[in-house]
Length: 438
Image (cartoon, rainbow, N blue to C red; front, side):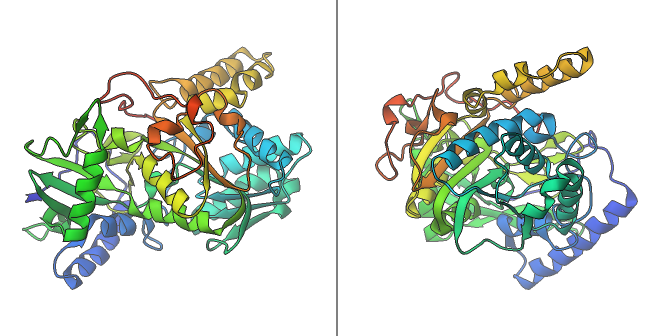
């Protein structure tokens, strides 16, 4: 089966210079498709579209974050987001975790600036703040942001080209996992196909094309769909439905396992949008979670303008917990972003802000509402933490820890499981409102 895609008339046209960059990237990908026999997996397409040196979305110089970019992340909304992360870091530092921070995919540098500012205000600036980012352009923007916001701490910041072999401290990833390439599948009855990319029949552009999955991939898909079970129903039970498409985040899972294996002492804190597996592969979520973002518009055509738009997929947090367990880490907590921020004192931090400027105060309260609202970021975004040699008492999960919803108790530390609760709402689409932030 081949499915074609077309540009949406609702999307603004890119400038000609940007289109030229996209055309060159498309040419290179086309050469790779020809060399591979006419078809590449979608994960290979996503890797090239996002990370091709000098041309990919995260490797080129286009503006990505904020009002002038394609989406807004939580640190762009309010510095109180970073202040809450600092509160959690301070607890871990107080309990003996080395005062070192590793941030992967630091974006505009907003979170780094906020975190350093908040920790410094407590007299606890980290000994070192290491940023691992593949984009030379973003590294320069991060450097400029930090030089402007925390110039006296710039000598503590280092940019790394690769994952350190030995990690001691706190590892952070905000909206990192969702941008890692995914494999796509389509299940039709009992048959499983892997979705990839080929040239369009007329030679102009590309189309999505399915081919029979190999035995190992098909077996994994069947297992995952059997675990997508809510209220006794699973996608595997509904094999007669016309088709079911979704994603496997193998690269994100491998990344967590690799970082976990290298984390000698400390904590890994990840914030992203997604679900436990039972919700991720629910039978009614039969079109997957893949989305694209361009100029604050969300759409579903991942082949449009390669290199000019963000491509993301929601996170299967059960898979992340399994990967961390494989690396020997303990699960320290899993909850919604809203609950985590509240437990870290977001409202108290807001009330401590000056109110002399009514307009500035209104903007701050509106930003906090976006961070907490179930209709925006508060529920769709989740926070998960793992650790090695760290007490299972993280303040950010004190109020409502949902680790039991991950379905992995017994493979990771299950301390605190009695406090876990599951989310309510519609069982098919409990969190499926589109997040305007990303």
